[in-house]
Length: 50
Image (cartoon, rainbow, N blue to C red; front, side):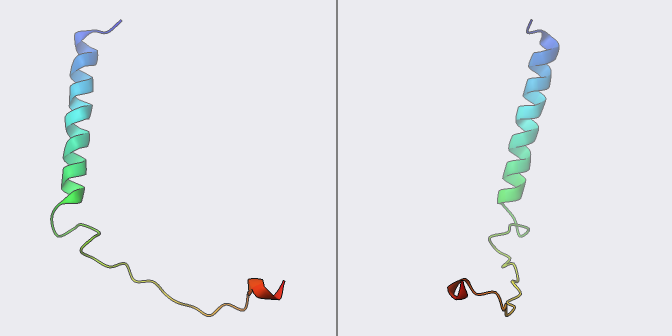
């Protein structure tokens, strides 16, 4: 049974989720504006030797 409680909770989750997505995709905290440093290490494991 779908009640008013369920409708309100669905609206809260929908609006909250949209807010989180918009906050994450805009602003200076976006991952697109900050390159993630990658540590390049030499590995002795080589697939060509097997």
